[in-house]
Figure (cartoon, helix red, strand yellow):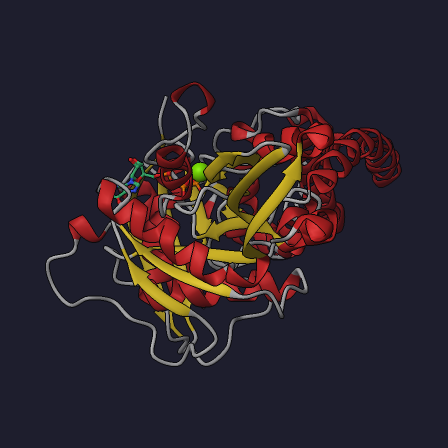
Length: 412
Ligand SMILES: Nc1nc2c(ncn2[C@@H]2O[C@H](COP(=O)(O)OP(=O)(O)OP(=O)(O)O)[C@@H](O)[C@H]2O)c(=O)[nH]1
Ligand SMILES: [Mg+2]
């Protein structure tokens, strides 16, 4: 049965209030809920005990009866006692934005690490709210689409939850060890790393797919939070140089700190990136919010120095003004559609330009007896103008600067 949902928001004068409410509706949809109504209220500050005012609560209660709503979703974080108080008045299941996002993540996580990370975030989210739950024993807890964490777990007391948190942390450490091994492996390959980041559903995975072989494709879908893990793929630039590209979990405004926290290790690749490509859905009205949100998360991850390229994707859907971020001087901005082959080439060229410090054009003469080096270069790079001379080969290539040392005795 599809849950019928009323969304509620308090307008405290924040700039993106309407966008944020629209996004909340999308999130409800992503959790397979059906939005049947919306209640908003303009206030100077929220009511400490019930978040919205008494009159609004009555209105909400009536509306819930009238529209036969099952669940009320608030566009803010609620404390345990707030949601209990509201629930007592409205007699419906109350979920807040963070809880909703956690529910979506819980239902989407597929990898072992992803599942553990979401579980950890869910437990940490519940811990400070237990008090509220326990004061109302009639509460049937759980969220839209909740999976993975059994509802009965809410009955566990704090100690049990804490024990579970410890246990999950331990499991995560193990998973992390394996991840670190793969990372070390990649670092040994020394290839420049380019990370695709940005809003959920902006087309990051589609862009990556258009750059790689069919049998290595990643999951793409028109829904929020399609990707929850980090994938690394080898991509060849127009000058023949290989790089590594990473695609990762998408962001959303007010992404719960708990989740950013939980996904830090998933997002760790971003820390090591030589270039960050921020992918924006250019066809939406909230491009400013998308960029800001993304920069905020990057800040939270302490990524502040890495060069950035801002990409407005889905330009094939744009009929009006071409979007542009005015105050962002740090980054170059380009416009493209992942569905257009020429645009994909343009993106690659831009990435190549941004990475120009990372590679150099060389001409080499290598004796045949040094075939190990010839082999290595052949595997790593594209060699051009190859001439087979009497005692060795002469060739040209674009190589990564980290390999300059290796070939310095062979430069022509
Ligand atoms: N029209 C159009 N659709 C696009 C374009 N790029 C991606 N899409 C569609 O947008 C939807 C989301 O694409 P994804 O690649 O899954 O987006 P994502 O950024 O990886 O999303 P998350 O993994 O949820 O963070 C899919 O339905 C894509 O087919 C584009 O340039 N034009
Ligand atoms: Mg994706």
